[in-house]
Length: 436
Image (spheres, rainbow, N blue to C red):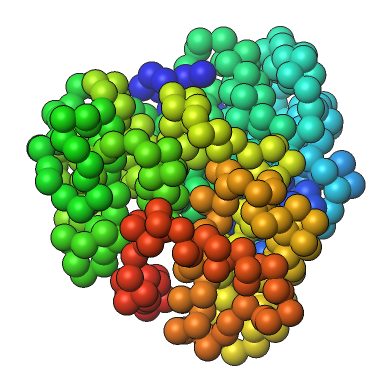
């Protein structure tokens, strides 16, 4: 996997590019917030590619086994590309192997055979291939001298990150012409892509350590081994902020009774040391002992569970994606104007799925003990209640009794009370997004 200074967006040689669009069932529809995020990221990618070389062309094809077809053949017409994307048919599971095979053998058509070909994979849903299938695919792509970029977001079930990393490792073959972007939960697909190696080349280097801090949530300094950067409240840089992803990590540390130092980061005026150690500029950010700083709340939680396995918080893979789409749908609902029935119904459907699961498996997602997915859901459900109650006068329907019991149990825990932001700051945070 490339970690050097090369960037696929600034290739010197012209390329014909085929984007494999995620049009699987996971996207729900071509109007869902997940699909819109993907489309915005594709528009960014296409714009960068088209503008980086006068002979670059970009096409798009569906990657779902039920809708495996070419939406638009490689072109330089960005409007044509985007118009085709927004009428894509949705349904079925991702079929990465066939999509890549079709892209090379059919969808590139009669384009210049000597021109560099690049295949770009946007994978939000589950990739059901086994590792040896991915390795065979990677070797075939390498033999054909195909370049590849991968944007991994959404559902990480079936070890998707490991599979896609392996694909890029094989295809790139240490040439630095293939890259992967793992989208952290705290960023949109477009935001993560815009900061990634795919778009912007990076140069590594050392960075200064943060200043010592004596802030809220701090434990016994003599036992400190962990430092964490979290968002300060909107408009109140000395108060714990409203970031649900930061709270998720804090809940994990609290439940494991781990000592840590907290650095509150004013996202409107980031400290110089923070910017230097964190190229993405996002929170949460964590460091264990004298190790490097790590971002991405998914990665952070996995690291905590790996380094401190007790108490065990790992969630069974089949439950890990439960409620994954709640926060994007809350955001879409809050920002909606006029007709909102479809948006409201989509959120209700997500909550109803959670309610049915809790009915069978509760009181928590995996039974009687909390796991990582509960610590991820708690802040999201809190934001749902506070933000939708304020902006839309909307509450979780009383018919979803198990969701109500679930949230009550989560909110009553000492760790949640200790790490939760005030309702005022949650509203202020959403206000900045609704009326920027």
